[in-house]
Image 1: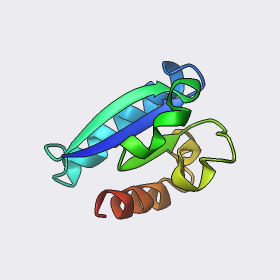
Image 2: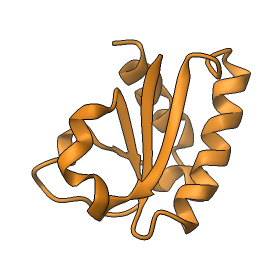
Image 3: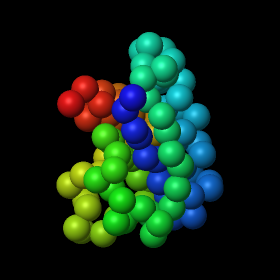
Length: 94
């Protein structure tokens, strides 16, 4: 079972929107039974990024973890969302 973290500044607002979109994408791609999603805020997860197979954030993250985090803003705007899903697919296939 793969572990996906979706986070935002508060762990409530934009991460909830992205979680819904990612859940739909997982179902559409037959991955919903293979991935568990945790929703949280950045401040709570900085030291736990390594616990997840993939991480999406809708807000800025510290430089120390930036390379491990997928920018989820395109999932909010719709511009570039396909690229985010491709990156997510690559992360989950590792």
